[in-house]
Image 1: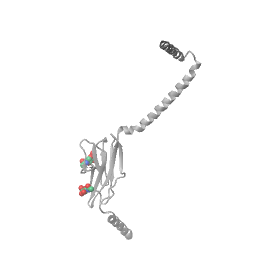
Image 2: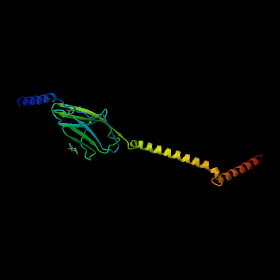
Image 3: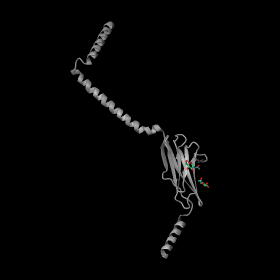
Image 4: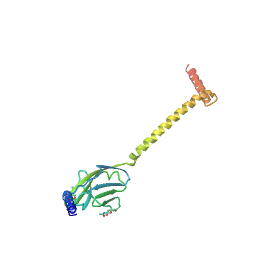
Length: 187
Ligand SMILES: *[C@@H]1O[C@H](CO)[C@@H](O)[C@H](O)[C@H]1NC(C)=O
Ligand SMILES: *[C@@H]1O[C@H](CO)[C@@H](O)[C@H](O)[C@H]1NC(C)=O
């Protein structure tokens, strides 16, 4: 039992020594995509030892100083953090305000680290495009079938002499007469 105890102590010491240091923070993705009006969650994690004492989120406005993000009073943006991870919740994503780069910063007693994620927000219409494509395809198919059916129906008409063809004939007769009159006038 003494050797087992020594081994356990040795193991614990080793892991402590190996892992202790400045934190490493990371995000699972380089970019996140959302639709306008959706709820979006950006997650930043760390398994560092000592654990993260303070998490911060910034928005990177290119060329300007980063803006620190905090819970906003209207509840559109909120930050939920534990020592292992931090989540930035964006409710009802805005296509003008929200796209861009988000930076998360985790700090422990040994130092700090940052990670970046790019958020892209698509308009509701863009989300509809695949659906509109299908609707257009179906419409074209229906039109083709309609034209085809109409054609095969007009092909049947000559067999039925008293049908829709009769008014056409009389109107063409009028036209012939008219042209005859015009012809005689010019002569
Ligand atoms: C921000 O809001 C979340 C959820 O509403 C809450 O858990 C968290 O403690 C808040 N943070 C601050 C700094 O008020
Ligand atoms: C991250 O936060 C720590 C603690 O507030 C700060 O000292 C450090 O400069 C920050 N790092 C960056 C890159 O903003």
